[in-house]
Image (cartoon, helix red, strand yellow):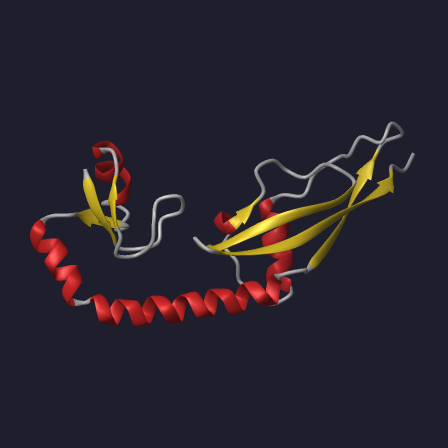
Length: 151
């Protein structure tokens, strides 16, 4: 099934692109979430009429995303977690922790855009990507320090 993307969809495409997807994905997710519409000849013609306006908006959004990514690149967030005698970490660093720390620094980032696939439980530094647009990512460093368990 062909659909026209109304918004950027991660791993699928950007606004205005025509994408080939499975019918169930379109019916159950893309269309109800207002992320896409069915690519009928009339819909395609309608999208072509507003292409110039959308192009300017897309360029402005992309520039804003690049600016925000530039501000975030290289930020180091430090966390402390308790470890036992064997060095096993109690607790972890999650997307919510990173989002809160970035908000404290004045950066508004959605939890869905922070790419931590498993909670961080390793002492040391871990690089984390923050997704803005299909071609725009920021890389931040999560530094996890050990605090000895109190007896």
